[in-house]
Amino acid sequence: MSQAETASTTIGGIDTSVMSNAILRSDRFRVEREAEWQRLDTIITHIEKGRTRRISDEDAMALPTLYRKTVSALSIARESSLDDGLVTYLESLTLRAYYQVYGTRTSLGRWLSEFIGGGWSRAIRAIQLEIWIMVAIMIAGSVVGYVLVDQNSDWYFALVPGEMSGGRVPGADPAILKETLGGVEEGSKDGLSVFAASLFSNNAGVGIFAFALGFAFGIPTILLEIYNFTLLGAMTWVFVDADLGVEFIGWLSIHGTTELLAILLAGAAGLHIGRSMAFPGQLTHMAALQKAGTQGALVMTGVVVMLIMAAVLEGFGRQLITGTVARYAIGYGLLLFWIVYFVFAGRGKGSAQNNGNSDGA
Image 1 (cartoon, rainbow, N blue to C red):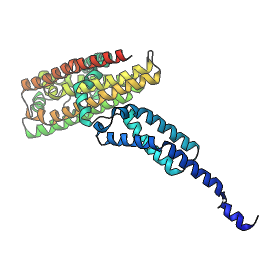
Image 2: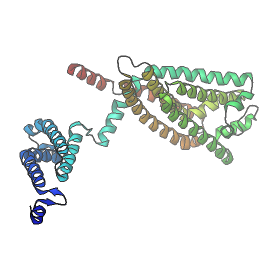
Image 3: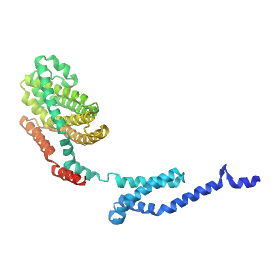
């Protein structure tokens, strides 16, 4: 065979007949299936642009089948080493179709409506066992902190960080303590703001860590919550000892009922994850963890909202509203609101959904 003939059948060491066969195979593969791909592309485009009314019932019913066929075609194209342009096109089409067939297709407004309308409260009710455990921990921790400082005031300095306590320590002048709670003088307002900011920073951090540490079977979560409420009990003793317990609790309540409840819920969500890992029941450990994680994330989304609300109340309401009665009214009015919301919101809708799921099963 001459050198010229060899050049005509090979290019760069690749047999031109092999290249031709590959191109023909790719073209034939495309021609056989292109109509289905175009149909799927048209349906997906209508959905993406919100023109679902243009989709016929026949196309809507065919969407899952077309998607599966396209996925199969993509697999064949990859295995057969067809041209890159075809593979790229199929990858893009299957990704778009997957999102429309299996993905979550809801607007932010619709998700927020569902979240506020019952999604959050149902997630709260799903972890009610852990919530009651956290309530017991809150009470026990507060009592322990109070009793420890009552027995020996040195415990206060071991429990409460110096930057948080400031001049609010055992034996402090009651007049100074009352002045800080009343917010009468400009200087006392500044000191109160620092104390309030320190409290919020501490409590927000506790809430986040209480949830994040739940994966360790909930043990760090319990210890963290115990310490936080022990600290609260220790600070309460200082003001009770100065005959200012009622004023202090009122000062704390205007934002604390929301903030401390948020911490309690965060701890309950973390504990729920830990308990699901330790006792998955009939589920596998991974399935139990996934379910608990989904519920916990929903609870924590609401916890963030509560902490933001508490921050606003702490930054403005507690500085502007100095009457003890008004502080109690606002604080415990909010607590009543949260309890009613968590107990009743979305209950009827949740029952309907559960019944629908049961019927489907």
